[in-house]
Image 1 (cartoon, rainbow, N blue to C red):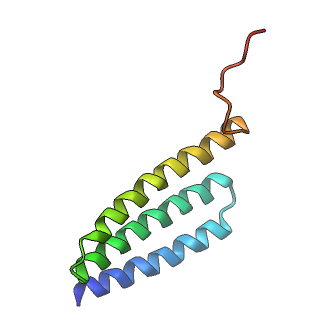
Image 2: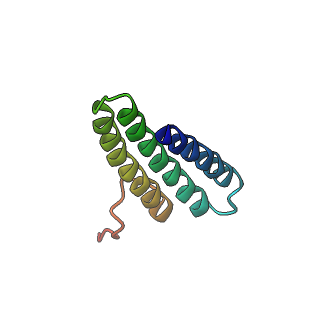
Length: 93
């Protein structure tokens, strides 16, 4: 029962995060909100796996966490340099 209440609380918090992602005045506010939504999704996966006695969901959550981190770094690099293929260093001719 308590785990179900925890899942409900995380879902409510996720709704607030979605509102922040939509309303956020800057791109960085939206990025933090999107990263928080990903973290909440990982927590929901872990809680659901614990409630249903299926530890496979923890592996899925860990994989999603790695993708969330890589996606965040990709967006930050794009915002910094304008393209994902550039290294950030100027080429000498």
